[in-house]
Length: 413
Image (cartoon, one colour):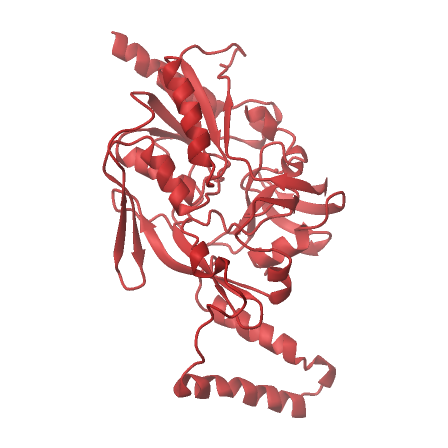
């Protein structure tokens, strides 16, 4: 099961889709289906216009007086002003998407696309472009890209100062073409990889056989990997849980280590399948208003003992699910600290044909924790090194097996 990451690595698929590590709460209805300008804001009032008039004044002076007139580019001035506005927010998840980028589909809505099959986000602390997770069996994974890798350069161009949208634009490309990346692994070594782009379909739920350190099947334990929360995830998961419960499995290993998130409704639906009642998450908007998402009576997982595998590739929706099951004592988290993306975002179309991807709320776990910029610490910390991956060795999975087996033995005594 972890072997698939051995040779490999938002949203992106290098075609890197701009999933912004999760897109929990992406509001398709607000702007996603609207024509350009339909949901753009009204023109600013007089005081705001006067405040921004100084930009035109500076632009005019530069056009008249600057020593290098060839450097005076009104389009560059506009881009700089937009970038300055957004950078002043200190929020890596609020991003301007240019008309050119928006027209070619660098947005949140992706079902199939051409790229390398990985997802990226901006590290909220360092500002570096980070690989969140590769899709299973994607060109990125097969090329050796790993969750948590820092993207150093693309086709020889440094990524310093790039936004996620910049990375998406540079890495995307038609099927059959190549892109060369330099990535820095968690052990600080850098590697150059050339990847052939392909048509990528976003995966959801993957079952696999549980095997112990000796390579033999482990009886009584089931394994499911969820790589994305989409409209089809709950249905796929429902079928798998039905099979697992009917077969009499005692424990479930739920792998979220390469799950950057997805739609909020899909995430809540999945969490509801494991809980009988209680809060799944609380969304807090700019006015402090709270929207509480709660589980409905009944669950699809029965009395299965559950371990959730987490790591730096677990973000947004996967953090919602992991926190909900942990806080309700429904699951134990094993692995490494999660990414820390706890914001709700939507797209606002702009009058120029571009768009603004805006953070509109934060969410809290059932126990009231904020995850944005912090992440979730596992209950049982187990590292997964590049050497483990190269040796096709998964100590986190082995720890989950030991944990579930020891619990089953304790119940029998």
